[in-house]
Each structure stands twice: as C-alpha cells, then as structure tokens.
Amino acid sequence: MKNISQRISLVPASPIRKLVPFAVEAKKQGVTVYHLNIGDPDIKTPDVFIKSLQNWKRNPISYGQSQGDPEFLEGLKNYYHKLGYPFIQIAHIQVTSGGSEAIGLTFFAVCEPGDEVLTFEPLYTNYNSYATIQGISLVPVLTKPDTGFHLPKKIEIEEKINKRTKAILICNPNNPTGTVYTRDEIEMLVKIAQKHGLFLIADEVYRDFVYDGNKHVSLLDYIEKMPNQIIVLDSMSKRYSLCGARLGMLISLNADLMAGILRIAQSRLSAGLIDQAMASHLMEVPSSFFKEVHKEYQNRRDILFEGLSKIPRVTLEKPEGAFYCIVGLPVLNAEDFCKWLLTDYRLHNETVMLAPASGFYSSLGKGKNEVRIAYVLKISSLKKAITILKNGLIKYLHTKNTRLQTRK
Ligand SMILES: Cc1ncc(COP(=O)(O)O)c(C=O)c1O
Image 1 (tube, protein in one colour):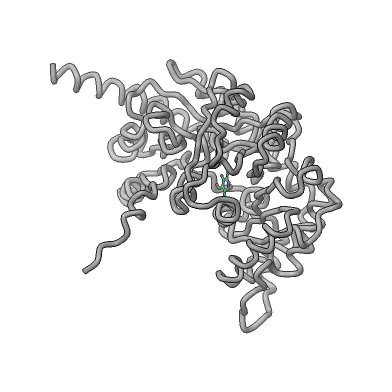
Image 2: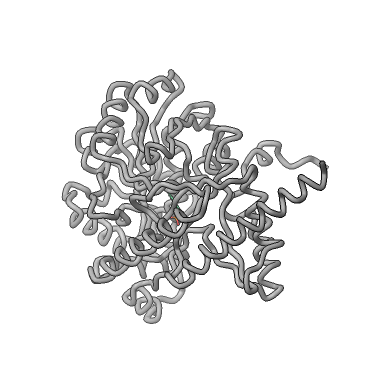
C-alpha cells in the first residue's frame, strides 16, 4: 500500500487544540476545566440571529451562491459603509467559510509555492498551518514584550524582504499578543509595501476589540490608494459571537484577484446557506450589544492583567485589544506545564487549560517558556482560573525542583 503524503506530516498540530484529549480526560474524571486556551466567545449570540434560525422556512436547504448569499453580501456592504468606507461594493467582497478560509484563499491568490510572506511573531498559529499546506514560507519578524510587541524599525522589516517576498501580513488587533498597531506603524507598512510592490494583508477579525479609548486603524483607510495591493480579512465569529456559523470575508479592490478567488470559491460551491441567511441580519444587531461586549472584555482584560501581574516571576504586557495575551512563565517548558495542569493538578477539583506559546512562533525554539491566554471567561470563572494558575505554578515548580534534586 502507498504511504500517505510526506507533506501532510509537516502541518503542525494546533497549539490551541493539541492538549484537548487531556482536558477531555480530566472532564471525564469530573474535573472542571477553565478554558483559557481558546478564543471562542462565551457572550450570547445576538437574539436577531437566533430568531432568524428559529424562523427558517426554506426547504430544501440548497447551495448558496459561490461569492456569497446576496442578502448577506448586501448586509456586509452596508456594514462597511457604516464603518466609513462607502466605496466598498459587493464586487469587492468574497464570503468565506470563516476568516480561516479567507487566509488560505489569500495565500493561494498571491503566492506560488516557495514564495515568502513576511509577518510578525508571535503570530496567529494558523498562518503557519496555511503556509505549510501551500508550500509557502512564512518569514517572521520578531516582536518583543519590552516594546509591547509593537513593530520593529523599518530597516529590520526591510532586511527580510527579498525577491521571493510577495506579501506582508499583519494581524491587527493581534492574536496572540493583544497589540493594536498605531497609525504610524500601519503607514510604515503601507510605505514598505508601496516601495517593494508587495501585497499588504491585514487580518482584522478583532477590529471591534480595542480598549482604553484607542481607535483601530484599518487597512481599509488605505485601500483606495493601493487598490491592487491591499487585502483585508474579516470574520463574523468574534464580533457577533458566531464562531460556529463559520462565516468570514475577504475584501479587495483588485478585480483580477477577486475573479481568481471566486473561481476557487466555485470549486468549494458555497459557504453555508443557513449561516448566511442568519448573518444577513447583521445590521439589526443593536449598538448596545457591542457596548456591553466591549465593556465586558475590557473588564476581563483588567482583571487578568492585575491578577497575573501579582504572580511572582510571571511577566506580561497589558493587552491593548483582541482578547489574548502572551504570558512569560518561570518554567523551562511551558507545554509540559500546560499538560501537567490537565493531568496532575487540581485545586478543589478544578484546573485550567492554557495554550503553549511555542506554536505561535514560526522560528524554532521561541516561546518555550510562554503561554497564550484567551480571556474568554466570565469574570467569576476568570478569577478562579487565575488562582488555579498561581497555585498550580507554585506546585509545579516545587515538584520539578524536588524531582531534579532527587535525581542529583
Ligand atoms: C487572528 C485570527 N484570524 C482568523 C481567525 C479565524 O476565525 P474564523 O475562521 O472563526 O473566522 C481567528 C480565529 O481565532 C483569528 O484569531
């Protein structure tokens, strides 16, 4: 029998999901596991979407159109107009099965195998997966905790550009660091992309999650100036608590690129019709929903930051947006610690699940003593999770030291 492909073995397991079997086992034993590992919003989906599902009448449930359901596309167009981009037309929007599909489509649309996409690490782990699947090299420029993971100088970015570089990809607000880039930073990238003739891709799925009164700077501000180079990736998942609906979008004014992407979209037929019919009500979501959600996440961010900052030798920067942060721990191997929390540690029969951060770097060996935390838990649970993490860390360090001393 023939072997399965070698290339499939290169695709990394998700650092967010790979410890799931240990969490499942703990839960089977009756243990409560607080999930700080995944950004799946726990805030209730707006009623208008749920009602639309309850009123579903169409039978049979057919395929949708490949570009997207016309009513959903119309709703999206109105959304971008309201956001301040009245030039965006339906022809500039491709509906995708989650922002995830938009990432894969964009890589395919701008790169040949072997081409390079420059991005900033720590990075959203699935960029790595999609690049690997397509034989593209992700070239990371390191961002560091001491500068709040903001961008390095122009020269450090330009140093990584060569003739195989096709695009710069930025995630803003950033998963996993929570960094929100300033207008100066975005304009620096715009200038670099202009100078080197590169595509400039922004993943803006966390656009609405920006704290402390700061404003998100969208690449849509620059898309008319660089209509053929800028691509914006977006998603319904986080903004509307619709992760399970699997709906995202890709925005570009480049007609050739959009035509090519539509051809691929035709090969996968369509995104889910029921999901799109439901999501077409997006403009009916009351603004109070976003106000509440924003307030809740900023509160969670504050509680997490304050709680973790008090744990000795734990380091983190205050996240400016999204609902994640990278946390440095006084351990040699954060993955071992994360696993141990699930297999060996309980505080009043409860534990926490974290995501080891090494999978959020594409450079080998980076992030070994870091975890990524998603603060997607209600405040009472978040407080408990912080206490468990603190006590677990003390116990883990004690256990490891005892083991080391016994070995000596
Ligand atoms: C930065 C970023 N981009 C894209 C996605 C994809 O989300 P979805 O496929 O649910 O739209 C995620 C999901 O966590 C994300 O964090």
